[in-house]
Length: 295
Image (cartoon, rainbow, N blue to C red):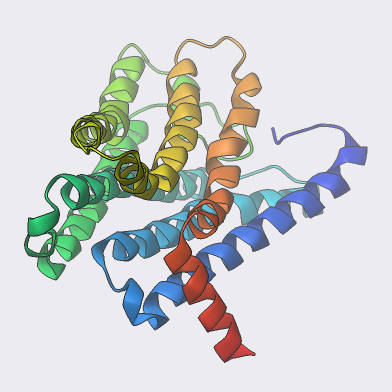
């Protein structure tokens, strides 16, 4: 159904989302290039950050180009296979985002609570394994969702009250028995949402407990400042994403969730590079070096 039926709004929406998509791509690619080219950033934290940027690029590319094309061609039709494909990649990259944020919280927990053993614990093998496991779990969750959707029967023409094939809404559009829909939604949401959130909350509980034991206020600020960027993105991503996902199970007017969907599918991936670069001296220095070499 898109974002608006107003024809006069379509050029504005086209320009706005094209601009946001290009900014997202450019910002995340700059983060990846800065981390790859600067040896000072070859640490676990920035390794996970570059993987998060890759996931954000995939997450945004899954939905925005199709929406921009729909606005340009004045068509909002997507095939059944196309919808399943979009939903599959959306779930993979969305779940990967969630798990990488959890891994980054664990990295900060080790750095602050076990600083003397940080290099030994967060070794390259473990970092690579954590990313691979996150990718595997994301793929598994996506396939579970697809297998369940394939068992359902749909009318030939249905309207999805969003600008993409939202997995949570697709389950509610089935015309076959949907008694288990909510149970499946909550189960998948628990794997991709609440379990990672539990890990993040536990990590930050340990981090805050450790910071409170630091005697100087300067030391406390320095320790917690390393977590500020990550915590900002966690709140923005989970606050909107889980709110939309679970409210769709009981909402009588799902289209009101479209604005929140825009926040976690478009705005959050666009803001991630800015939040990290503006609050991080190492990234800013690497960016300046990268730009000076380019020029």
